[in-house]
Image 1 (cartoon, rainbow, N blue to C red):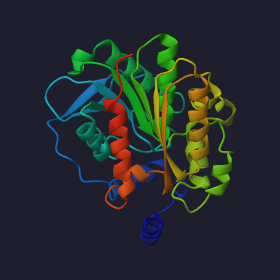
Image 2 (image 1 turned 90 degrees about the vertical axis):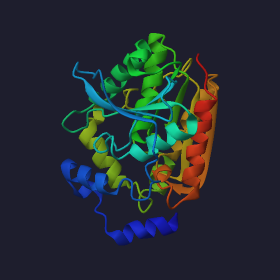
Image 3 (image 1 turned 180 degrees about the horizontal axis):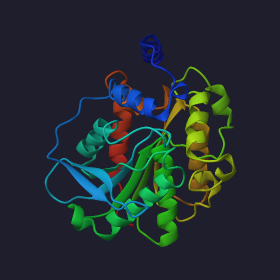
Amino acid sequence: MAGVLERIRRAGRPSFHTLTPAQARVAYEAGAEVLDLPRAPLARVEALMLPGGDGTPRPARLYAAGPDPRPALLYLHGGGFVIGSLETHDSLCRQLALHSGWAVVALDYRLAPEHPFPAAVDDAFAAMKALLAEPARYGLAGPLAVGGDSAGGTLAAACALHARDLGLPLALQLLITPGLTAHADTASHHLFANGFLLDRDAIAWFFDHYIPRGQRRDWRFAPLEAEVDGVAPASLLLAECDPLVDEGLAYGDRLRAAGVAVELELFRGLTHDFIKMGRAIPQAREALAAAARALRGAHAP
């Protein structure tokens, strides 16, 4: 991991907080899959449109390793609610579909600052409800899981809470290095504030573009603020050297205390976003395998 961080430093990649959101999106698109595994060929890679939270359809992309209907993972990409797209997470979604046997439906939710909180949440909720209501319309069958990395993990956890409140069945919430707390104030945020890929200034930049400080204790932004009894089983994949690791560990503890089934894997010596570094870090492939196992082991509630 240290070698990867040094390569990134030598490449002179600008820090996101020094860019405009438009510039940051271009920079992230250019580098998002440089260290990721090659895009695996699949039997089905299809463009979809799913309902959006404002009534406007949102682009989505379905990935499946075979032509037959199968259970689905609604996948919500990372990027601090400001950057990221279907393209930046294409390889990751392909790998999840290939190794799990599930279909993966990636959602292109609205981004801030053009669409601040709760636009991304509303889009994720609308897509989840559509996939649960009419799976056959999208060539799917069986249970639905929700998942995501980083900000997408925040959205996935919020989806699981919303599904619980509505009485909707989810098989699993797959949370990869998720953000879960209202303020970046845990010990790990201080310990890994600089030099570990996701820096303090970048986190502040993402948050300030997405949500006013006065709204940050809303559970849709900070799932640790919610009561978690009765939510779907969880699989958490965390990185030891990640500013977000403490809140991930705390959420796992909160879920267990509420009687929710939890599988938690902590990948030692790794940073945020490591799961998208499969060309360089063997543990990225281990994390993908763990995610695939969690999906294969999930059952209809």
